Length: 389
Image (cartoon, rainbow, N blue to C red):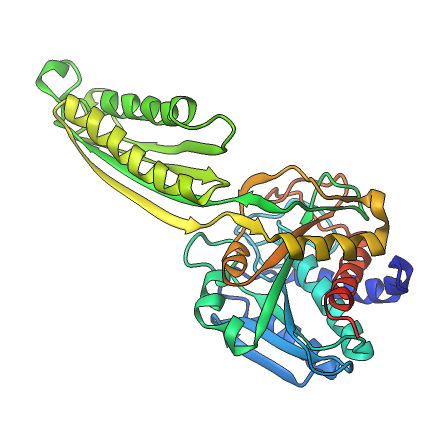
């Protein structure tokens, strides 16, 4: 039986990998050096079946167990960094100006490499493990997860179940969080252009003021959440950008409104798109203006499947004990493109504690290397639980 101590030596090695990756971050679909690093490590572990260039810089490697034929499960780690100027002040801070691993993907990659080395040595499972090193998790659409699914990795590698893991600041090191059903929200974006009639600000009666109309539309959108959505169902509509004329004395002829929509329920995406269009058109027409409306579908909700969630909970509890696994973790409306893989195959997404660090996407964030042994151990436990000999 494994416990966390089994993976301490691997943790020390994975720490070197993780810090190298942190020093050398690459943005979405540009992870060429990262992919080369990962591929060389996988080959050094004796893994022969490695396919590269999937979704440009993605990798899938297969490890065959020694327990005989059986199904294939996928384990996914993301590799891309963010366009952020690092302020962690760590010795291994980014060497690439304006780019940093601010979301733990360096740690995710290192943990899956650690698990790969262990599993390639022991092969104490029946069937196969597909190691999915994914590019470009951060872009909205089309992201790396979407493209890997579209390029057919599930069928090509015979993947029957798929699992993901993400570091989570605020949860103690050595603790896990997961829940069945929705665990993270969707992300859709919208653009509204209000077209009025511009003029001098001293004579507003001779204009159709798109600024006033835009203000009414923004308030109307909030009423969709407060007055037309079940309060027990999560929907967030946030206006994040408002652009108009850049002068004190000009009423512009148009105003641009942009923002994001988040929900845990796929059906609410349809509701939001239809009702937002109706609100924008109705208000604009009431003032004699027109609107252009674009609703940009991006990442769907991340929805854990029941049986695979049970598998994940069992594996985590075997590693760290019953009390260290929260099986009713609070869901988040942040988006995660692992959702595309969960639409393609049943699976589960689990959160791993990173301790009291800065939050993800913060310039001061850094992955806590003490978490590496727990992530490696979880992957190994999951494989041996899902594919018993």
